[in-house]
Structure formats: C-alpha cells, structure tokens
Image (cartoon, each protein chain N blue to C red):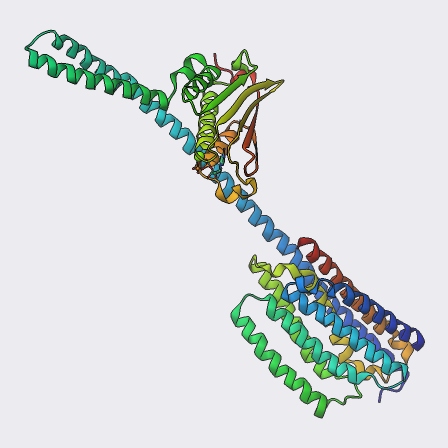
Length: 211
Length: 273
Ligand SMILES: Nc1ncnc2c1ncn2[C@@H]1O[C@H](COP(=O)(O)OP(=O)(O)O)[C@@H](O)[C@H]1O
Ligand SMILES: [Mg+2]
C-alpha cells in the first residue's frame, strides 16, 4: 500500500511538471495574478521533486513541507494581493503576510520540529488563505472588476486549502495510526489536489481564450 | 499514545468526518457564490435592458416630436406667414400704380424685398416638410433631390428604382423618415466623404424594401464608428429602428462607403389611402 502512495507521489510530480510547462508558456503575456499562479505551480513542482527525492532515499521529507507551506502562503497572499482592488485590503494583506511569515519561520525553528508536520503553521497559514479566498468571492459579487477572471482558481484554492488544513492539522496523529486506516484520508488529499490542478488548468485555458 | 487500534480507528473516522464537513462547507460557499452571482448579473442585465429600452423610447419620442414640430412650423410658415406676405405683396402691387414717382420707386424696392421674403419662406417651409412627399410620394421626392443635386456641376447623383406603386412599402410617416435618411446620407457623403459620385437606389424585392446608398468618397473605419457615431448616424439608426428595419454599413478608408437599409413591406392595415 505504501508502495502505491509512493507511485502516486510520482504521478503528482508528473502532473505538476506538465502543468508548470503549460502555465509557463507565454508567461510574459500573463497578467500579474496569473504569473504568480504559474510561479506557484513551478515552485510546487520543484518542492514535489525534492520531496520525492528524499522519499526515494528514505529520508524524512517533512522538512520540505515546512519550507513549502511558507512558499505557498506567500504565493497565495501575493495572488490575493494582486487580485484585490481595495487599498485597505492590499495593505492588510501585506502586513498579515509579513507577520505570519515571520511567525511561520519562528515556529519551524523553535516550535514544531522540522521532522514533524508543522500542523499549527499550516493551520494558521491555510486558515488565512481561506479567509482571503472567501473575501475574494465577496469582492467579486460587489463589483465588476477584472478580478472575476480568476474565479475558478479561487474555488480551487478554497477547496484545497480547507482540505489540507484538516489533513495536516492531524498529520502528526496520523503517523501513529496504522497505515491502512489512513489511506482513505491521503486518497482524499490526492483527489482534492488533482482537482485543484485541474481547476488551475481550466482557468488557464479560459484566460488564454479571452486574451 | 494512540497505539491501541480502537481509538486510532475512531480518530481517523473523526478526522474523516471533520474533513468532509469542511469540504462540504467549502463547496457550499463556492456554490452559493456562483448562484448569487448569476442572480446578480441577471438583475444587472435586466436593468441594463430596461435602461436601453427607455433610452430608445426617448430617442424615438424625440424624433417624433421633432418631426411634428417641423410639420407645424412648415404649415405655419406656409399657410399663415406665407399667405399674409402674399396679401402684402398684392397691396404693394396696387400701391405701385398710384402715388408720385418717388413713392413708386420706394414701393418697388419694398415689393422686391417682400417677394424675396416670400421665396425664402416658401423654400424654408419646403425644406422643413417637402410638399412633394405628400403630393407625389417618396420616389418623386428623391427624383427631385437627384435633379437638384445634379444642377451642381461637381456632383453626380444617380437615383434608381424599380417600384411602380410605392404605397405597398411606405406610408406618409415612412416616406418622411426615408427621405430624411437619404438627406443625411447625402450630407455625410459630401461633407465627410468629399464624394463626387453618389448612387442611390430604392428597390422592392418581394416583401422587402431596400434602400442602397453608395458613394466614392474617402470612406471611414466602420469599426471605430461605435465611439465616433454622430447625431446623424444615430438618428438614421433610430429611424430605421422605428421602421422595424435593419441597416448595414460597409466602408473602408479610400474605398468609399455604402449603406443598405432593409424595411419590411407594410401590412395591409398599415397602408393609408
Ligand atoms: N459617407 C461617409 N463618408 C465618410 N465618412 C463618413 C460618411 N458617413 C459618415 N462618416 C463618418 O461617420 C461619422 C459620423 O457621422 P454622423 O453620425 O452623420 O455625424 P456628423 O455628420 O454629425 O459628424 C462622421 O464624422 C464621419 O467620420
Ligand atoms: Mg452627419
């Protein structure tokens, strides 16, 4: 079973490779928010690559998760920073990003071990992104701004952030659980993640068409 | 600490439950968003359509009142002022025959002036409402336009038609609208297009009346028209809309311009006799 999960990891890597190639095509023509998403996909590909490398050599790959969750938090914050038209919201996002990033680093160094899941870190950072995502929906409802170009990816972000928030929150407990009992959770995780990637691709195609 | 299988099993079940609850919540938010967005955009669309309808109603109303005013002024000019001026002129003619030489000369001058004013009033009232339209119809009126423009040497205006009985296609108000459209198209060709040669035709094809208009002027970019549409073309469009017709414009820079207007035939009960 663990073997299957390992293969799933490589499938994810391949999917990320394809998606990052697709999103980096005509990168220059992307609007700023989509440049950020493309960078995010590229970064995810790298992180997954490194993580699979660690896994292949049976090293603890949770360190990658610590770095990755910081990267992901900053990337999504930047995305929501560029898609909002409200100055107050922009400034708040900027301040919150700086504060939480520092907290995440402090947390990884002194609090949650680099060899464990950074549950608290993921909870706080994903929770913040979830709030941004919901606020984004509200903002689009209230205005005709260009932000509606990124609705699909926003739906994906909301789903994926909610899901991984729960899974990683309990990640350290799951380590104690028999593997067969947690396979369902990781499968759900994988399915949500693939759904997220598909939504990114869908949004990408839609943007390319309207351009 | 959670090594015994039973609590572990419970734990995964709890986690799974929480996970699905959270996912369901996220999905609900997404769904709610898309549903309410659809509703909002529908409402916006309706409001926009209403506004547009209101605007075109207003424009149509404007055109109609404008035509009514013109008609009224034309009639007043012709019947009231015109006839009174004629009386004055008659009186002056009588005066001419009596009185001293100086008085006669003065009367002559006033008579000349009065006749000038009479001419001016008549042509003004004809411009406002060409009587030929009512008396002899649209085709006669357009033939008159053709004749008048061809008197000017530098312009060649060609008008063609295949219609014998125009009453199937036009009633009095349609005649007036089509006449004004032609006037504006000619004005534009001369003013903007610096056209030398204009071809105009009014053709009846089955149930459709087709007004075609071509000039050899400088032309213009049709794509840029939306922003640069002036009162003239707007008015034409509105008149066409009032007549339930359609208009197409084709033009390219240095290639001349052409306009085509298609109107449906009049229903039997719409024809006036
Ligand atoms: N026959 C034509 N030839 C060249 N340009 C034309 C012609 N008809 C219309 N146009 C262009 O379309 C514009 C709008 O015309 P119009 O609505 O009649 O406004 P206006 O005559 O008041 O400028 C004009 O300014 C001109 O640039
Ligand atoms: Mg004009």
